[in-house]
Image 1 (tube, rainbow, N blue to C red):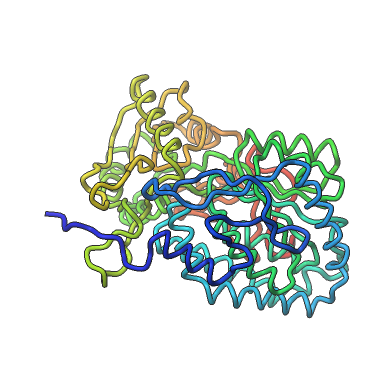
Image 2: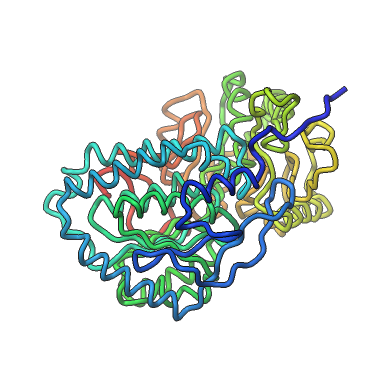
Length: 489
């Protein structure tokens, strides 16, 4: 019998919010967060109601600005940029280092906000914060050769990023951009993370880092954040639909840009036999419910190996842990070890569930479906944002699951008989960020890997975005503009 679970003491949203009011009273007022522009916290914008994906309880919503106010914020950021670009590197380094010390001091609060705002399990929320801090420290320690004989941009960098990694992608990028001599602007993601980002930006602003943080709809703010002549570079992380509009704008204006977009990352199996190693990695691929730009939702499997693949895969996927990220057996119990909690919201959960049902109705074969009774929930908890692991064989070509990234815990499997079919199936989305090919023959890997349209291809092991000297990018529709990382700062 499963014991009755309870919320770990001191971890409620109310607890987290009260700590925010104490740590950064300039940025958190009453029941709302403020926007940061013109080097001051502004009580502007209309705060919309928001709920946590964890239990559908109320949390702070983003204070959405109108386009005219965003334009004023961008002009103010240009003034900051013109001053900051002349600040000597030792002083910039000192201010960024002090910011990192402050982030480390408040690491647990930042992680707790990530749990409530975007549903990250405790382990992964802490990792998001740590990767931001450690990644920027690497640049702080080795920045000189990266900016030798190079100048800051003509204007601030505008950052528009998805909600899934507020710290290790967005805050990381902002602090490195500032270290290199640029003022930075960020739009809070529409789907979550506003309180975490507000706290991080408050800590940076206290150290004199030229940070602007605004909220609003992409459509209303794009004129200011993408097209404004003051913007020196646009850095975008998100879906292809929005990314295509951004790409058109920056191309028309000749503006510097980094556009990271979704792609169907695939894992190929060909003449392979180390199933123990493969089984060990399967649960890790479900980290954060596959809501990652480097998740692997598609397996392309040699037909002759399908029985061995299933024998390794199915027990591993059945071990994936799902539930409330803060539910414990006893008050003194450690945080639960989960692979993922909720999806970003109930609407996404319903969309994905509907896509699975439609795919099965059109011929896909369900190989695994997680059971709600195996998950860890509080008594009476709202679970509308949770989706249990699903595995489908041969999704029909008419299904979005056949050609697009689901951004959720749904695996699809395609069987192939030839190397040509393997490559075609692994390149189904016209470009991806990462891929993996599991084969026992190194010569086969060396011959096939260059034909896989992914920026990074692992030999039997998953690849990740990476933060340091390894470059990151994509192929095809997954990426446009400059590659990032290391010396390409």
